[in-house]
Image 1 (cartoon, rainbow, N blue to C red):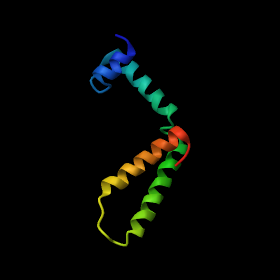
Image 2 (image 1 turned 90 degrees about the horizontal axis):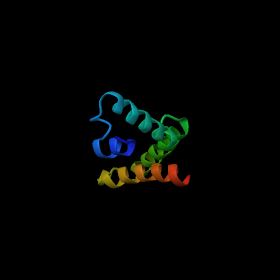
Image 3 (image 1 turned 135 degrees about the vertical axis):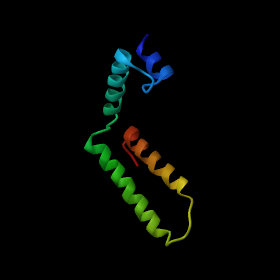
Length: 86
C-alpha cells in the first residue's frame, strides 16, 4: 500500500504496525511543517484568543452565538498560517 492510501482512506487511527509508524511519521512531519509545536503558532493562537476576549468584553454581557466567534478564531489562525495575515 502506498502512503496516500494509508492516510486518506484508512486514517491514522485505524493503522497498526509498520503502516501506523509510516502514517504517523508523515502526519507529524506535515503538521510540523505547518507550525504545530512551534512558538510562532502558539503566538498566532494567543493573538486570536486575546482578540476574542476583547470582542466578548465589548458585547457588554449581551447574549451571542459562540459558533461565529469560534469559527472566526479558527479561520484567522488558518489564514495567518497560509497567508501570514490576520
